[in-house]
Image (cartoon, rainbow, N blue to C red):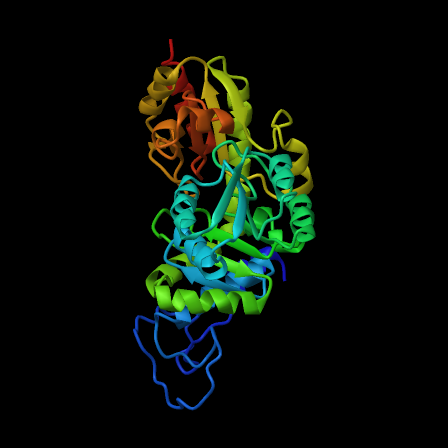
Length: 386
């Protein structure tokens, strides 16, 4: 089946055939009949007994997600950070070495700092594929990267990182939130684990907070499942229903997001008040060649630097009317963010300089409005800059 068919019809469903609902019901039940306790339990399978472990609505969207990413199995979590933390707590141990670049999600870095007090060795490299591969020369147990970074949209060369990681026996974890399974499926390139914040494009409507882990090996997934069971980080059934609804239109939405974002990126590239535009499929992007090789969809995020100071960037941020000033991305509404005072507000000036995040940088999540209206709003706001 193609990606669109999998998004609409994929997954294992648990429905009452006498009633025959077309849409997976919300199984809002904390427990289920457990008729034969003598049956040997197998993680993440039927029979179900308690929703902290498994739930039919959650299981349905998990199996769909596994199909979309081409994995052996998937687990749903209460947030993207719940997925990241549960995976690393489950698999890491005192003395483990984790390699990751500086430009991963800010809360991921915060967790790594917390995690290090348990004897985990964290190596933070400069952004870019080459820096990650160089750090792997010293050995590692895990390497954690994002397929497309936030907010400068660097596309990491996942096949090259996988080769270097396998040479030292490291488990490769890729956060695929920005790319989505429509843009890239890292497991096809040898990745061990894929992580998603389903809050973003997967649910797609800014009305759910959720996460996923997809594994290429079912035993690896079962290990994480056991920790999820104890930690209680499972996705809730009503959230799973919303995420499943979002997944059904993911392939259609991502085409529209990409089309709108390309138009916005091209407009901004020619605007006299814009210094620089970051979009992975523009030829002037630093990872353009990697994007051409790996991305099937370039996504809906466009970052740009306003000509001038932070005050000029904030003037644009405050002057938009249609676009919503806020955080996050991936919904149907266009949202503008100032990374320096939101997502990266706790970073030191040195960290920002290393990552290339300047005070005049804005990140735009291009939504599904008529793109002419988004461009008109941006143009009006940019012309407020002296």
